Length: 294
Picture (spheres, rainbow, N blue to C red):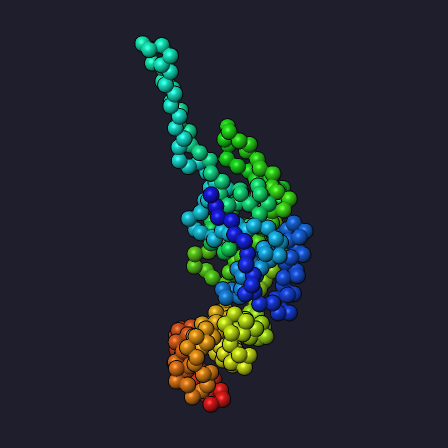
């Protein structure tokens, strides 16, 4: 049976920027519409999806998009066998044997969520091939899930009134993703998530990692300036900030231009993102670090 999750939003960082998006998305979900959080990697789409699901207060079914998916991975299928054998020996000289072998139907996550009224989070749904997601069309629009023919059950499942769906996708990534069909996008409300503002990134570093406000702000400014000067804006800065911030906190590194370990840490995290502009990036990073207090 699929695992049901309960959200634990204790580490969720709420700022005015996040609160504005949350209010919009929650409004749409409460009205019964699916919500699609679209944005580059590192903008917090999955974290926000889990937070929204926790606010709805229902159990969560989590699915990660996969190119190998087909419709059975969403709705279920026949698996294994049930074997029944009956031996009738009422008359000792006559033996009558009956055997019956049947496959068992097992619900997948979408079917279970629709039946029980759970919140479905479909992370990076466009990594699945469009035809694998066709079952979602009637579930979101007509609130009816169409199942494969089977003599032992109905071919239609009426979707529970409390069923909600939250999707995420990354429009900036081209490897391993598929163009979502317009029919599916037309059944959801899309919210584009850009890079969090400086205050949000600082609050995430201080709340989740325990950095001081001044140190968190220094790291955020260095990473943002490095990305923007090299035009690396397709790759948001939050993950880089978290990497640097966690190592600074756990190993008690001073966020200072005089600290060789801190300078090496920033170079290891940021310079590989410069690609062919490595030398230019190295000069820029040294300049930015030199602006820090000693």
